[in-house]
Length: 459
Image 1: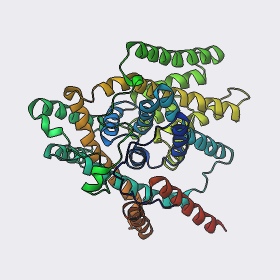
Image 2: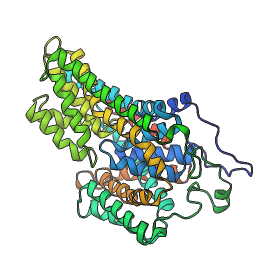
Image 3: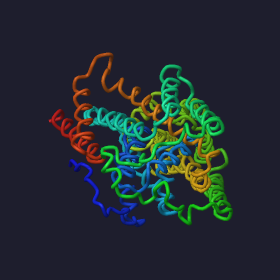
Image 4: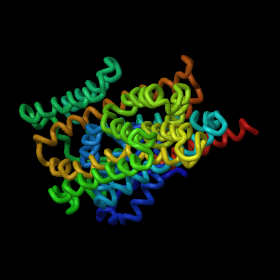
C-alpha cells in the first residue's frame, strides 16, 4: 500500500492532464469512505490529496476556499469538498463532490443504527479505531506542520496562528469569535501594513521538495495565477437560479411532508428542526449538538439521552462529519414513531433518515454554490482577501488545537500513557514524512490492521 516519494519533476514538467467529471466522481467516492478524523482530519486529507499529490489546485486557492467555508454554518470539510468540486466542474461537480463525500457516512450510520435498533448494542469497533485514531492524529499533525510551513511567513501570520491556538486551547474562546477576530485583524492589516499578510514566493512548492525541485515543480490545474473558469465568474443570473433552486429544494419537500403527515407530523417537524440546525451550526458539530440533543430528546422525544450518547459514539467512529450523527437521530426518531406500520418500522426509520440528512445539508450546498463565485472574485482584492488570508493563518492554530484535543484520548486514555497508541502514532508519522505514504493508503492500512486485530480477539 505505501506510495512513493514525490519524484523530482523534469525540466519540461507541465500542468496535470485535465480531470473529467467521471474521474473526479471516482475520487470523491473513494475519499468519502476514508474521511475519518473530524474536520481537521478531513481537511488534512483534502489538502494532501488535492494540493500535494494530485496538484489539482494550489495551496493559495485551497486556503482561500477553506477560509470561506470556515465562516459558514455547517460542516467545513463537506463544504470545502463541495467548493472544490464546483471550482473544477461547476454546479454538477460541486453537488457530486458533496454528495459522494457524505454518502458513505449516511450508509454506514444507517446500517449501524439498524443493528443498534434491532439488538440494542453497538458493533465491536474498538479494535479498528484503536489503530485508526493514532493514525488520524498523525495525519492532522503532518497537515498542520505542512500548512504552517507554507502559510506562516511573516510575524503577523505566525501571531495569528499562535493567537488562535491559545484562544481555543487556553481560553476556550468560542470558535466563531476566533475567526471573527482573525478577519478583523486581517482587515486592519490590509490598511496599515498590507505586506504583513502576503506570502513568500514559492509557497506553492511541494513540502518535501528542495528549492531546486520547487522551481521545476509541475503547475497546478488551478494555480494562483490561473484564470477563473467561466462557470466561476460572478453571474446574477446563476445566483438567482441557485437561490431559486435552494427555495424549491426546501419548500417543495416540506410542503409534501406536511400534506402527507400534517404540519406537526414527525417528518415535517424533523424537516423544520434540522433546517434550523443547519443554519445555526457555527463553530463545528460540538457547538450545535447540545441544541440537537435538547430538541431530539427533551422537546420531541425521538430518542432517549442514553441513545443520543450512543449515537454520538457511532458518529465519532465512522467516516464523514460528526454532525452526521443527525442521521442516527432521524433513524431512531422514525423507528420509534408510528409513521407507516407502527413503531419498529425500518422503512419509516429510513424515510426519517433521508428527511433529516436532506434538510441538514441542503443549506450547506446552497451557501457554497451561491457564494463561491463571489469568493473567487475576491482572490485579488486585498480588501476582501486580507480577512480570508488572516483566517487561513488562524486555521493553522485551529488545526493544532484540534490535534491537542485528539492527542489526549489517543496517548493518555483513562489518565495513563498508551504505549500502543504512541507506537502507532510514531509509525504513521514516519510513513508520511519518510516513507512517502499517502493519506488514503495509510488510513486503509490502519483500518485493515485494526480489523485483523479484532478478528484475532474474537477467534
